[in-house]
Amino acid sequence: MPFPLKRVAVIGAGPSGLSAAPIPEKLPSVNPSEPEDPSTRTGLYNSLDSNVGALAMAFTYAPFPVENTAHSVTRYGRDNPTRPWQTVARRASWRRDQDYWWQERFDAVIAASGHYTLANIPPIEGLAETARELPHKFEHSKAFRSKVIVVGGSVSASDLVDDLHSIVQGPLILSQRGFNEILEKVWNLPNVIRKPQIKRVSPFGGGLIEFADGSITRDFDKVIFATGYKLSYAFLPGNPVTEQNRLDGFYQHIFKIGDPTLAVVGQIKAAISFRVYEYQAIAVARFFAGRSRPLPGIHEQHDWEGKRLEYKGPTNKFHEIKPDLAEYFNWLRDFAGPPAEGTEAYELPKWQDEWGVLGFKILELKDKYWESIGGTGRVLGEIVKAKL
Image (cartoon, rainbow, N blue to C red; front, side, top):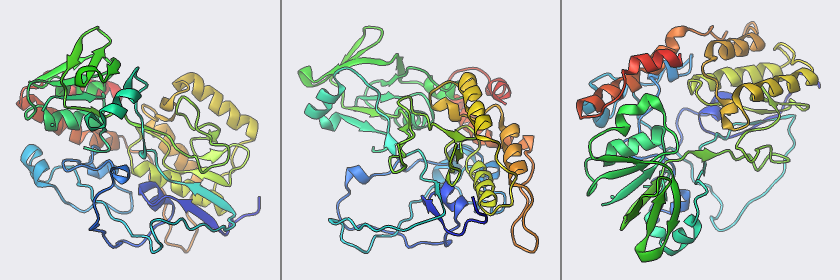
């Protein structure tokens, strides 16, 4: 493979894409005058703040602006480590009812499209039929009551429970197959009833839900799925996403085994976003420039994947970096190597243990707030210490 590679395409313009190919600081905001199309709705909602502390989440070269929402200041105090999200977009110049296709050739491709696009709806008996007959009763948290059932056990579900538990009529029903124990106090807020996973749903009598324990709920107004996302790289040859939601055949979650001119940035979890995307992107950039350390042989790359399957399993937890944060960040740093002399490039810092602590600051503030309004659970510090 001739180095340096001259033409590289970056797919994606979120934090991973920004890491791989910096874009102008400001793009024109869009305020559509047309009615909202639910199919194009994003996962953003009014009370959404970052859930990783800003000092750890920011790129090493560009700290986030110090800005807090009124919502976060009320709950967590001034100068708290949350940061608000804002959607920025550029409207396409061609007609919306037409596709415009063209072809270009590149030396390499970086897929940095993220993994928070395709909603993951669990396979529940009767769900498809009931949703067709009663479409107004089912939503994913990507969209956004009355008698509400929230399905999920991680960050999005915790935000929904936090927002809804005190305003719904009757108890807020929370259905979980499993849950993030760090968020334990929000699951145990007043007016929240916890149920096991949903066994089946039926449109009979205006809607019926049966849970795994045999209990039944009727006359509900909304079911909101906060059940995460499916990986989607359908534009890549061979669609490398497995049925168990894992990206198959990419060394260190980045380089396509056998063809490293195809790289992915951002396909990892529990690894201190966005900072880890920066490390991945710089590792890819210096590899494409011919200045990184060489990749190991294909046999060794396959061996890495096999050992990781034994360690993390075949689901998307394969891409979960914790608790090996120091090992992964430092591997990326060592692989990328030093910057080119006489350029504005910089050397990636070594992993610092305080990053993990800073990353949990927001969760500590949320935990304190939930406890103040009646949430119960174990001492967060003990759980965080075990995670780190």
